[in-house]
Length: 470
Image (tube, rainbow, N blue to C red; front, side, top):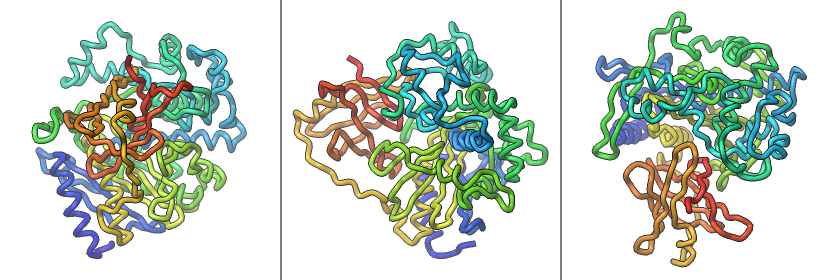
């Protein structure tokens, strides 16, 4: 295990970050060339019982599940059962949007890269209705959903999408907006093409061959491991933030391919071997080298230096190398899996509170391990002056059907973003309708989108497009 001086500064920094965000517990694990070189836990998996976190503590991994779904698609492509360039309707003829012609052009590739043109939709919340009903902390949401039938199957999900009134964001392949619905339907494609449920296919073709014995969709499937992190939720923000145990887990049967796998730090390091070795875990081949390369290809640039591949975010110049990663957030879950392929580094970071500063911890660990200052930035953003007339082009409220809403205001010469917690964030102008702000010691880029007449109509924020509300 690495015991260099970096570990002390990293651990002090991380502990302060977790204390400031009132995060109950977290773990970070790093491997070099397939060998564990460092791991450290912080806080507890169960605060009340002061249960320590280990490499075998089971956490949700939320949207880190997405790369697993893509790996399954690549296996089916290798077997000649589909092509990522096939139209989605070839396998899901029930899939419909308000634009019939564009729908026919949407391919599996577009689903995998979030470029189908689907705006964020409210389907996932409705698919969680049964989980909300069993969660004593979600009764207000249950009341809001009382007149809606839950979405329990792929077919019901496709029927729901077909009834929604929305415009596609553009021609397939031209606009990026993170879509849990698209990834849910990748699960449906895997189901129909393989003849097995998505969950069964993943277990037989990826989890078991990779030796991931503690990775499951249902905790009752764990045969030996009882080391399961308690879920925590919060209310309020800043100093008023209150964190509390909330053990009722959420599940969405049609959305499992988008983010409902559970795993451990140890298992996730095994999984990442697939991408470090170009397809192997030990002597077992999971994917071809070509499939691995395709999954880590930067297909679509989302913001400066940050692209999306297949189930992975690809940072094309991360301190001179390539960082391939994906995060996830869900009730009681913050997760990151990551690797730097050309340097043989893999890692995982997990927490038992949604939106814990896990991405910041990931980057701090890589900084320390690679002898950089703990808070070093990979991108030195070149900030520009912004006139009042120009700034006012961005002012307004932006919302999407998923329920997210932000407001951009111009006050005392500064452009501010409101709607993330109770704190306004200062936007710094980067040129070309792009801005950056800082949260949890992370620089977060956003980009505004104009129509053909040059008017600002949408904003891409936290990977999702929101439409300007007139």
